[in-house]
Length: 496
Image (cartoon, rainbow, N blue to C red):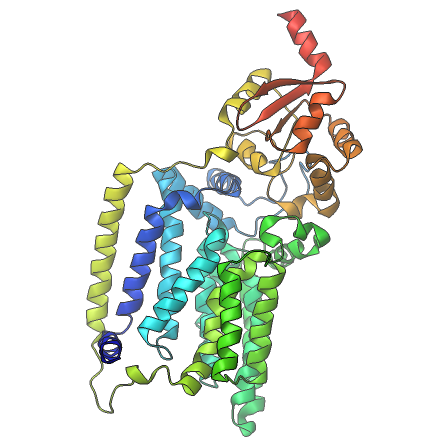
């Protein structure tokens, strides 16, 4: 017991923010060293391609030019800034660039998380919570725009919670964060949605005679944040485009990151949620009505869509931090006696510079001896080479392979932009690829005048085409199988 208390006091007496900086640097180096786990989603390929196109042409996309099934239809990129950043670092450092950028975003997120919890929890508990948050969110840590927006989300919502905890109004300095968030990723709508319930907590806990004035300030901030979210190249269309994904209906249950949480097997999220419920009952944690609404909302989001587990993991502790500190006295070890001199901030600045220098030196050394490569399962290089030799123009492929086709300047049948293709089209695609409806598969092949198919060997459609009249297997390896129309294959054979 005495060792634990001494440790907490020593950590608490450290310069402000030093523990957060060290934890963030540690998280950055860990994910940098395991960088391949960030390069396993083909969406990264078309995200970088779009970012490079923006850089090359100096213009934003307003219509689709990457598919032949939706070519020319209206489409905007709600993550344009992230795409540009990913394309820039990819062009400069190859795949090491997106790994470094994404790992840096994770490190900054960890640092912000611990810094926000510092007034309420001792560093040991904060580090335990951030470790749990990383474990819960790890499956969605990918070199994609949502990761670059993660530290901005945490800083913005954390700023709202700081205002609520102090029964005050939000700082106007949060508005630039909203502008940045809106340009990085469409998830900024979550920040707008949380202003209301967090503001309700601030008004609920304030002095009754100040509630009206405080509510008016929160309402004014909400309007200002809404206006800030439209400070993008697309203006108001950014807000409309970001909410379009929510109109995909039952399709969301088929896309892995939008699927509901699966409790059929134990997971870190399930263990954390059950542990939180059990601990709250055991320690008799009491929350205000607005905080209960906030917590239930975060739990509902995580249960409804797996991609929201990271939102729950990083935001739920901010909602619970103050009540836990007040009722469980978790911050007692860190309370300094009255009159004690605060550690100087210049030590933190010097430490930050030293950490940055050491981190960059470590990064250069590691990257120089460790070339990163994208996962091969979604990059069928040899198969696409065969299709290019045949000059195939209209290729029916799975959505992950579609991302790779776009990176090769080949227009895709479908890719990860589900909001572009719409619910009916993607549902038909799933029915066709999964072999649920042979007629749907044949209809899509004829409707879109498909020259060749490029499918994973394990999907039912690839095996079905072996038995469909008019189609012939041309090529197969462990990553992909190609089928072409038999009449064209025969014509080429006769020509040879």
